[in-house]
Image (cartoon, rainbow, N blue to C red):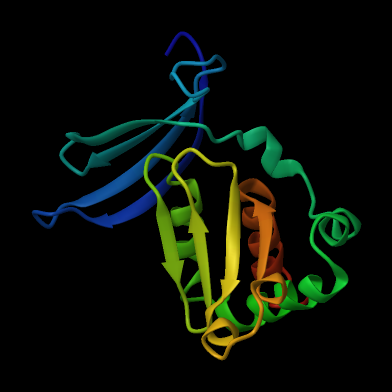
Length: 169
């Protein structure tokens, strides 16, 4: 490879014909897509066949950013910071976090991750997500008290930190 570098290689599970596959993310160090994408996601099966190739807007350098509580409260509110903590406790587990992180990396489609209480929704190519307390909304609570926005990279970092600190907030 002349330009760019591989930023991650992760297992992608079994393919549609039962072969193991992996996801490779390559930062090509320049814009290659019409919507500002600068990375590639490549899904390769165990036989070396490319199953998926997508351009993505996923800045791995930004993963070094830490969650900024004060900034979150400024954009959302102190009350919604409590909702964020509730979201982490309710939805992030050893079983769910990898699926959520995989969804956050998917920039090519509108994506939704529906948990037990919360929904994470992201529009195609968006760099932010909306986290919705669906249970509260079903009980008539105003959306100003049930929804908060967060950057995709920021949420991924927060989830990773939460897992790495053994579910400490």
